[in-house]
Image (tube, rainbow, N blue to C red; front, side, top):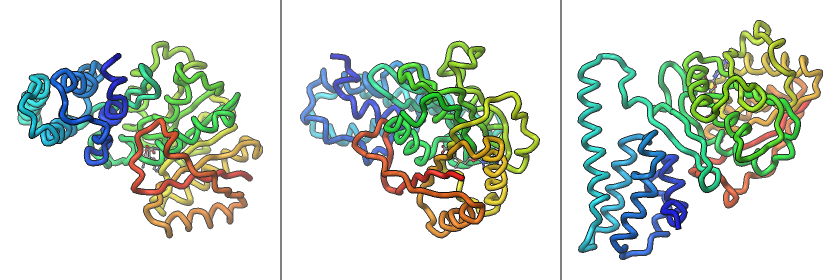
Length: 332
Ligand SMILES: C[S@@+](CC[C@H](N)C(=O)[O-])C[C@H]1O[C@@H](n2cnc3c(N)ncnc32)[C@H](O)[C@@H]1O
């Protein structure tokens, strides 16, 4: 059996940096034989995805430390565990040297990779910022609401059939890359990812290139473009298909942007002659803020229907379920 299948859950969680204290450690049968220890390292720190596109170094360190704690009573520890630890420390000193040598804020360690495993052997690799807020935006990493919406779409794939999809505030680009992922064979039409932040669009472009071979194939590949909600009328709509389905995840948090977002929705619903619908996913951090936006949607004559909850057990994505995510369907 492949090492990553044997430790499937830990493999999946490690590659997308799922919180260490919530990982499926209970799936390990202690005490672990040396061969088992080797196989676990091969499925995580030593996995080829992590070798080529490493996850955050501090995360790898924390993973190995936690593993060592679990194995503390073992007489024999496999060398690969120490090699993983030493490898991280060596990279840490190289990174420190690199950041000493440059005063730039974009040192080698401000970005790392995450791999979202869809099924054995199939994954999405994203470059993401190690900070929730950087370069003046919140969009350089993937948020819980995007993971929840990704699950919802996979569980309701019929919503996508033949539909041209437009995402607003797409951040690092997970959803669009998912919708066009060859392994899923979703029968989706054109997928256009947009964001108002230039660094996000640059990152999306990079992430699309990481996951798709033929970037000139506009049918098989998601497209991306800069779209600020207050500039919706200036956007070159004629270059793209009229959207049937709008997506947005974690875009309702800043009340100063509400009017712009609504203006963008009004414009796009008009463009589509109301023959479109929107799925909006929001992490419920502040109930009042979300409520205010829902009231504004009604004032703009939208009908808002809550969608069924996303089933946690059928989740393809390792989500930290601490905060609830609300998904609503918006029509006019
Ligand atoms: C919290 S992030 C969510 C990113 C992504 N949807 C996710 O869930 O991972 C919010 C995103 O909305 C974008 N955004 C915020 N205000 C915007 C505006 N006025 N116009 C366009 N995009 C905006 C930000 O640049 C950022 O990428």
